[in-house]
Length: 466
Image 1 (tube, rainbow, N blue to C red):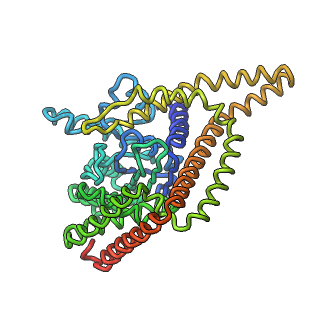
Image 2: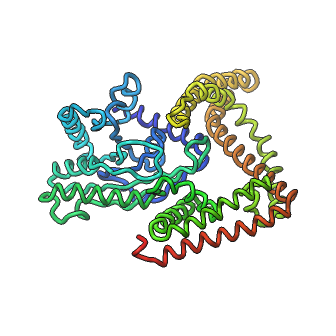
Image 3: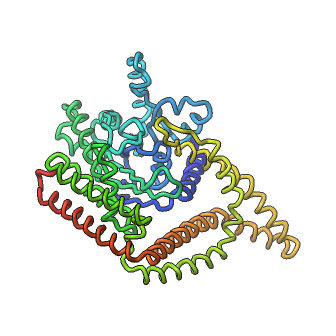
């Protein structure tokens, strides 16, 4: 594996992730050791985006990926991912009538990874083996335990390897500039599973996989009954604080999901009553031509002045930030041009935004690769006539180093301005229809109390609710 290629590609992935996502929060980084062998085991809700984030946001250490074999065998992409240290494994769904061949190839993959683990490197694997839009965690496969167990066996069970669960949660993975939370859970080793792992391989593989299942479910919003997902999301939104950290929002969403799942089995009539009250509230919103974003504002006049001041400040900063707007003009328009070309509809009418985002990002960086050197050269030519070679070279270097940061700053300031404009619009709508808005605020607060009582009763149930 080429070292320079890996670190260059990783820096590129980091910049791409920071440009594509509005907010990336990572908790639990301290659980990833600074040295020594470990296997990161993650859920897989968002296809290639999960790999990009895992590679660039968690740790400064190099990560070797384990992924489906078809990626490594692709003509161009296969060569690229192999340079990143990716090892392919044969999935049963792709080898239905060739199980023995799949077993041989997976054994070869294990033998490839053993020296890397013995050398103290990091491996990463998506434990479910597939990526889907389901709101629940699929069954975790035993592959993650098999790789680590084989390395421990080769080291006579003295390696000290750890398995580390990693949970991804996206606020709106189908949208550009959404938020993503990455939570790193508590690591565990073979000693935590069995006092004599050498004598109980099958038991260790099973108990370790079950532990990963439980740990990953605790890190994400796991909705076992898909039909309840819409209700859970709406109830969590009612008691949410949009300004709170992503971790707090996800923990609240988890509490709501567990409470709804519990009462769906024990007292479904209570959920039915709550769902009907929520539907009545939504119908009242529609009749009044208002939105929940408008109603959630408690003190519209102070919010109005706050947002007016914020819009004015952000507008002035955006004027100053025209530097970033101009610098990134060609990459941004390259992405905008490529995005529709990659648009593909999935079964059920949903759009394949992952492929769209991938090609848009690729087009943006291709545009930057062409435009940024030319822009830097033109700055050098412009400066050389007045300040000479040395001064022009220094100015061109500073300009080149500012290109990507100014691009990111422009996108960030644009997000803030759009959010403030949306808040200002909602406040003005509230003030234009105060009678309807105040009446619906009362209804919303009543719903919030019911949701909080639901959570309190769930937690009071104690172990029976677990």
